[in-house]
Length: 183
Length: 183
Picture 1 (cartoon, rainbow over the protein chains, first blue to last red):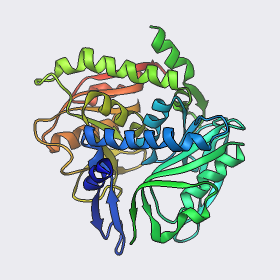
Picture 2: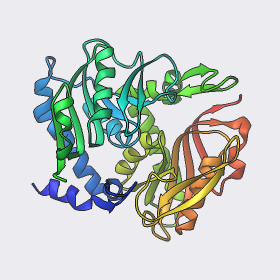
Picture 3: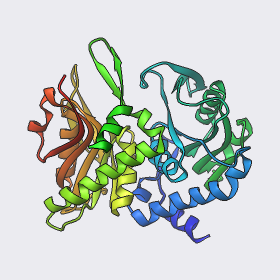
Picture 4: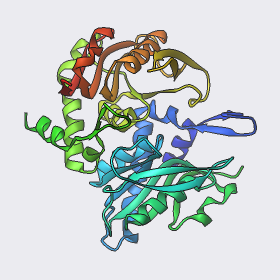
């Protein structure tokens, strides 16, 4: 598909960043070109409208949840196009007001993500977005936060999926990604 | 103006967050309501088209610079509507590839922001966006990064400005804000 090739062509690989052995895939070159960024957003919007809403009992997406910080680049614009709410997931201590928490595994030890307790109402349908899914730990924590508030996660959507880390098997809803990496 | 009142009505004040003596103004309730978020984005887009582009020698805005992380909520969507590039400013170590740095004052000591060195070309016109301006330290550092790459900052745009901190006097371009706080 030409739009996927266009998006893929702008991803820039940075070996050994942030540390040796990791190849970092940078999405910011996509955002530097409005026509390519538009292709990315349109692709995701089209996917949601042609596939994801069918997974919803109400045939609509009520909430887009975006993971701090690169999920903030995609989430609000998708939410606006779909007429959905945008709700952030952030590291503990960043969000004001009453929050709920979910922990996730880091390389060494665990950490917590938070969501504001009044952000999602029971029964609302949710799509979780971020730029990339690796081990799936962050996505899983986000899914737990949605569930704690009574939301229903329809799908987890990413630009990039690192298939070899088999994250999708951990999650409580399907994963959709535009670009898949085998290694 | 009715749209400013609408936006203001959704801002939620949280006293003593993140610490005693600070009243945190939360913008996320705006993003939960698509019609209010649209009012916010439209207001900023209209401001840029009716006022900011007149400040540009080329009568256009080439780049929207957004500060990590709440600037990421507004910047990409504005950039897309204006046909401009979106360029992030992030804390040290988060952006891959060759980066330039600018330091800013924290409560205790200094810290640095980074921008990717190929993100802005000399002569490009730039608008810097974030959710709130307080002391102006972060905005000033962002302005320095733009200048180092030969960009021309036309304006600094925020949802909220804390007037009593007199940030605008520190900056190399005008400040526009939708909501001003006297205390």
